[in-house]
Length: 75
Image 1 (cartoon, one colour):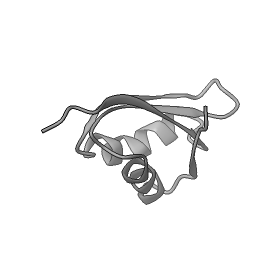
Image 2 (cartoon, helix red, strand yellow):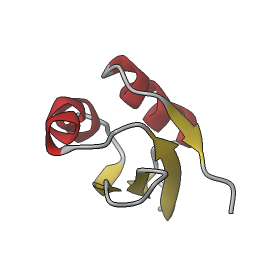
Image 3 (cartoon, one colour):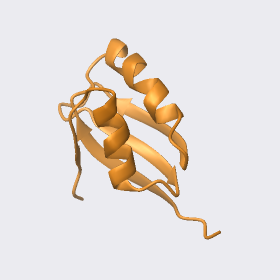
């Protein structure tokens, strides 16, 4: 299996510790996620996902399942 390590960045509305707690089980169950974090101090609430194979679409689906808005951050 080819290793596909990269960091994916998304703009979200995950803006506090409670929001992070709500999305945690969804992202933690995501296969192919090494680790992730949300910069709640940033105005764009940037979610960084360190991928080991998960796609942008799969991450976006997980966050939407948790009830949050998400869009791919174009570099």
